[in-house]
Each structure stands twice: as C-alpha cells, then as structure tokens.
Length: 116
Image (cartoon, rainbow, N blue to C red; front, top):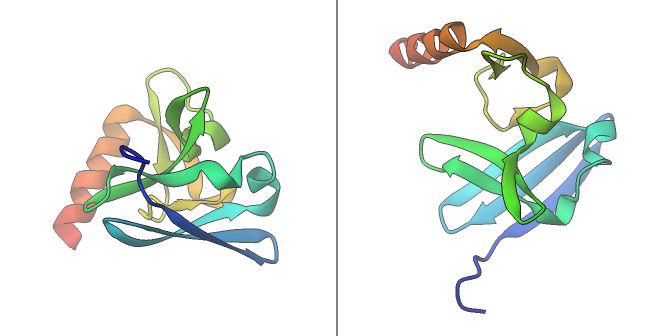
C-alpha cells in the first residue's frame, strides 16, 4: 500500500444535509452537502484537497483525477468562481454556493482574512 494515503470517513445523515467527517494525516475535517447532491457523488471517494492547513476543500476522484466538489455542484460562468457565501470552504450545501466574478471573489477572501 505504499503511496496510498490513509483517510477515514464517517457519514452522518442529518435531515436534508449529509455531514462528512474526514480524518487524514493533516487532521479532522467536517464537510456538509445537500442530501440530494451527495446521492450523485461516490461518497467512498471523498477526501480533503487544497491546502489542508489554510483552505481545505472537499474533493472527489472522477476519472482518475481530483475535482473539487463545489465545482461539480455549482456551475460558475466563464470568468467566475464558485463562492462559499459563509467562507466555510467545506460547506458545499447549495444554499452556500454561488457564482461570482473572479475579482470580487478574490476580494472577499482578502477582506475576510483582514477581519479575522
């Protein structure tokens, strides 16, 4: 099993939301998805991607490559990014995702760091 990373997943069904607890070598993470969206994803292939220490994202293996889940659930127009409205990059519920122009989304990230 060399080269394989150890990832533990616990999936909790909470009404219309699925809560995914993921533990890897970087720590413990909690992600949220709408139940209907999660039913379209291979839950056994969910993992944390991105910079686990600063901006972790929920990823899934599709066709041998990792894709960020928020990009699968919310289509961004050309020149736009998918924005997590509440700044929680692991909250992938439809009510928390929207398409924003890239420049505005980057500005929101900068401003959120200043306020912290």
